[in-house]
Picture 1 (cartoon, rainbow, N blue to C red):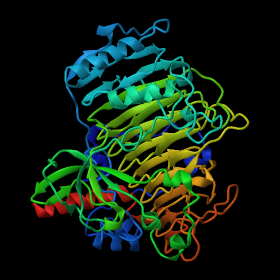
Picture 2: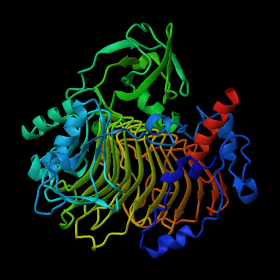
Picture 3: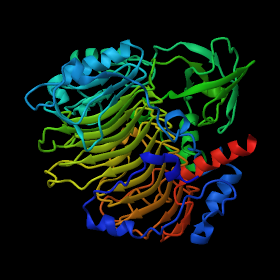
Picture 4: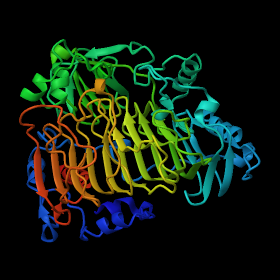
Amino acid sequence: MTADERRGSDAHPVGGITRRGLIAGAALVAAGGTVGAAPADRGADRGQVATLWREFVRNPYAHPQIPYVGRAGFRGGAARLPRRPVVADVRDHGAVADDTVDSAPAINRAIAAAGEAGGGTVTIPPGTFRIDDLIRVGHSGVVLRGAGSGRTTLYATRNLTELIGAYGSRYGGDKSSWSWAGGLIWMAPQARWTSLVTAIRARQWPFEGWTGNRRDEFRPLTSVEPARQGSWTVRVADPSQLRPGAVVLLRLTDDAGHTLLEHMAGGGPGPEAYFWDDKTKLTSYVPYEWPVRVTRVRGREVTLERPLPLDVRPEWQPLLTTLVTPLTGAGVEGLTLEAVETPQAPHLLDKGHNGVVLQCAYDCWVDDVTVRHVDNGFGLVAASACTLRRTRVAGRGTHHPYYCREGSHDNLVEDFTIEERTTPAPANTQLHGINVEGLSSYNVWSRGRMAMGTFDSHRGMPFANVRTDITVHNNGRHGGDASAGPLFGARFTHWNIRVTNGRAGLMKIDGLAPRSATVGINEVTEFDQIDVPDFTGDLRSRLELYGTTDVVRPRNLYDAQRDLRDDRRRRQS
């Protein structure tokens, strides 16, 4: 079964890009299906099967350069998103498709009613609904569904600074944290939302991660015995508090020698020689916190929904713990969020005309949603196992079209589009593209069309992320404070990337990312922002099928890994 067949009626083109170079670049790609499971040669008559793929099939869960991402996304990469019964229509709560009426209170009342009823779908009919406040999805199992991104529009008249207040940076200065946080559609558990707003209005920094504002509001459940990266099971000291279906947090604490950070960077002489102690922003992201669902408990053996992202070693004090109760099973579908058009703000002074953010969310989704004229488009902030499908960023230009930060893991962004800006970029603004930072890992960006931007690894050493089957006009720039440390950790993979303007920066990463892979990219050269390796010596990275994109097989690494998973499941059954 092909990827398009799996998506069924949800499949649709992701066109609408105006840059001629991008369209020309897309023409480089030959027609062909996805290569999936063993045998790895399926479809090879139309292209060359990458040697790295053959290696990966033999060792999928612990390959030295390519991460296993075959279960990224909602419910392990489910091909279809759930359809929940309709329990409310926003019109029944007072919403009106009228640009003189604020429908935000009515929409929020309908969402709250659905949450109090135990979940379900809240519908918004075709039309344009003015909102003078943000929309909050704070109850698990609630879906906000419009009639389609081309039929239902929420027109946002105010920004987050006006609605909530200035949101200063925990690193000082006059930077606005609305530059990388918060959305006019904000998906976060209700209790998390309350603490966030309370802290912001008190001019305090609200910690954004999985374990509460002080990072110590967690309860250990059990210690974990040593295990290797790629293992699906762990042995614990005390399984009495673990139940199948529960989401728990694997917590790894670095030691004085920073061996955990070295392990995330792939180990070896380069990471061992790197000076970590002054990278205070990076070290603030540790302990590494990875949420995961338990699927089986048998004695002291615990099976997890996904294989371990890292080794589990005694010196890192491995624990399974509680976490902030995440938002689960919630979604936003079928609408356009359009902010009132204002000039893009100078860099890091965004007012918060932001799109959709998922925060402390697990197994949630966004589908068929467009954001227009926003400061920042779609955000994943301490969000894991979520799917963003058929999303689009359009309008006057955006600081972060997509951002993934604060320990976000195992997310899938597929069939995404960043359109060319409709107005010239004002002075002192910045464009990043698809961002990942803050020890975020095992995230996937698949089947994308980017008329502007770049692959922004924003320091904070993200690792084991995949970008695959993407056409990009590479004119953005990466960011990240020097105290956030390396641009890349180990097992980053860029697979079948079509760069229409030939710029190498952050695309061809064999000289930048340790123990990583660049497979199937057209010829590119260094210009504009020149990337400098963070680690010395041999990075032990791989470059394959350089200079072409039309013969690389499998064409899409994520689809192929998912096919491999499904094929093995069929053989086992």
